[in-house]
Length: 263
Image 1 (cartoon, rainbow, N blue to C red):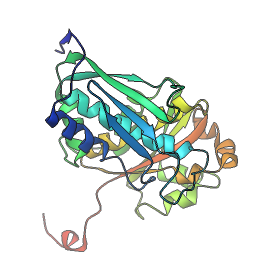
Image 2 (tube, rainbow, N blue to C red; image 1 turned 90 degrees about the horizontal axis):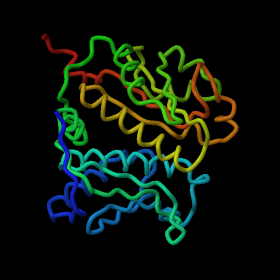
Image 3 (cartoon, rainbow, N blue to C red; image 1 turned 90 degrees about the vertical axis):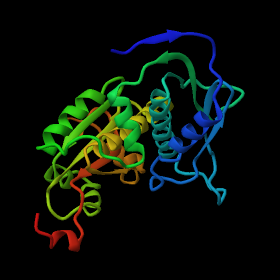
């Protein structure tokens, strides 16, 4: 049973700061690297988007950058829960800091439960749950538990992915040759700043859920970079709104040495 206590503002300890920063750094680097900055305040965390990359060039409208910041936010929330704090996110814009994506405050104690420890373990790639008998059935359950508040998640089979106009072939080429995988298509009802950040939060939660079960997850935002592509795919196959990312989940690939072993 979860219990909570309300008290004064919390001040992070040195060890808590180390855990929080390490969790933030576990966000997938392959989406876009070096696009966020974390400021650890006395009693809160401020997450900023880095408006220009190391070459001084801005990315395409910041859409993918905000999604990546959402992934970092999901990791920070995960770490805060493991530390026994209920994260209180504030995604409102600050006129004095327009590049601030979110502020997370620790104002309420909450006892971590098994799901919190499992998700935190997944940050470092540790499996804590059995591999699901049916990846597709598991995927539908995970999708149902995470969609809502302007976010839609559609579970697609390999054949459905390949049939997606403009992007299907590109996505399928980046996964295994067999059909033992599924894809979560994450879409937003609109392309507001808050929903794009939320899409990143959900995509990262899907990745962590796959790791918990010993599955391999990979997130892609690049196929949807072009606005015309997102417009063309809006509402495709029952998806809600505009597609922003796809998370592909598959069984771990066996090495040649593993394939030759007899169980």
